[in-house]
Length: 337
Image (cartoon, rainbow, N blue to C red; front, top):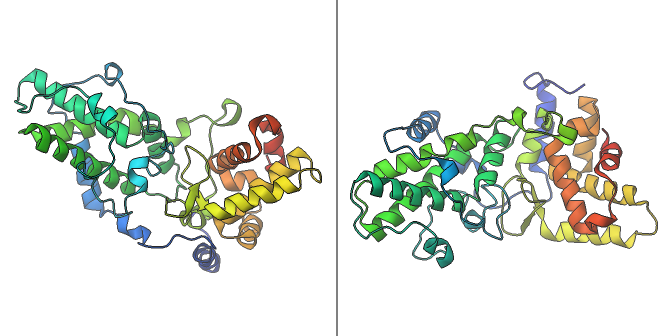
């Protein structure tokens, strides 16, 4: 049975923390803590996102810009944040590669945006469309915030909130420079408030395998997964839509190794062993994985959850080819359904 969060022995907590720190591919550079937002600041940010003092806009009537081809399906893996530091620096539209095609697809605004109802609505639409695009699209936004509400996500919701708010600030500043925007606080508040219908989907409302309720990884993996949950130079995202990354050379070598053993293993065994190697690297090594599985005394799938399972499944597909693989049902059984 999985250990209930908060009831683990102190010795176990120390071992898990040591395992997380000992991962061969732990992030380098600035500490993850740099994204932490004080509680009072987080509450203030959410209050600003909930302001309703601007014209009402219907998200269903506002077109979405195309998702960037290199976006990874989450806010953190967005192309526009991949090249930024984890301190969440604001984008500079004068030097960053924001596609001209994107900018030309936005509503046309005059160089002097006044406060009429129509122009205010157009300005809010402009800000929202650009913000949504830079965050990776509606699906990426919804998926990211839902994952942070799972209860075991290594990425804290307030980290994502800080990124969103800083990026919104950059969008508004871009508009202010380009159009002499006089009502920037109103536009900023409206753009942030438009996120609410997207980011408030609870994790338990997301569907998992065969339409069943989705379940996250066990609490015991939270700290172990944290070290590989952020994009970094030299790291590669495991699969689109999931905030798991590993050393790109390790992923390539592991795939080649199992391709060489093509005739020695069944398809299910090759895919399953490759996938479990990925899981072991994500949590800091095979010893760490074996230890935490022994301590939780549960099945492997219950330990890693459906987010990790789907990520390693997609990784196996991209490595060996979708047509060559076993059905997802067989894959789940191998992992330990």
